[in-house]
Image (tube, rainbow over all chains, first blue to last red; front, top):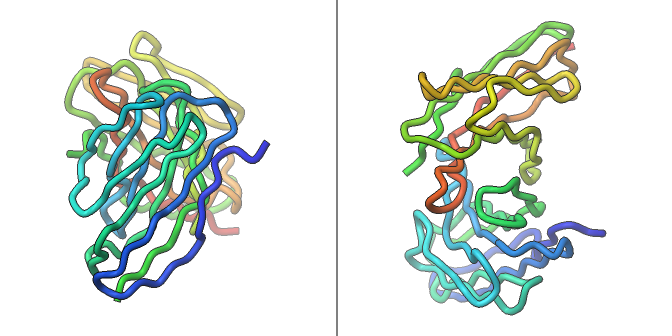
Length: 112
Length: 110
């Protein structure tokens, strides 16, 4: 039972490059989330998926897209990376919105 | 926008002492949760308290909730060096997802 897994752990991109962050959970949770964490800013929600087949914008969605591939997997795509997207990205899941969330280990992304 | 705000931003204590951190929020909630984050790791859920509860315990953790003051406190008793981490409160307003505060950094020195 791995919980929430994220790949990759680290990534360096050049401005304008694209990449997809992968997230998977094995807890049969309905809801999944993507956050970014910057120093002094706490966690900010990028996108979430309340249930399979639905996605919604969070607080900071600009520059990102998401796909809820199936119940287990929720990916985050940066189409054209910018230095402002340098951050640590966390995926999380919960049984339902408002329930306790389980977090992955994070992806540290640097955009130069 | 973030609803929960933790106070203090940073707290430094000695092992064996108690640590208290507070969280204030703005609108009504269904529940309030506390999470811990060790450096470089993902957040770990500690405890959830519902709006109709006033106090909850889990091991060395004690959480209180005062809905009239829109505030919560997390007390860690007999702190250990391993408690060194950032602590976040998160609120469930029932309309969207959890909203996290910016956290309290706790340093417990041996």
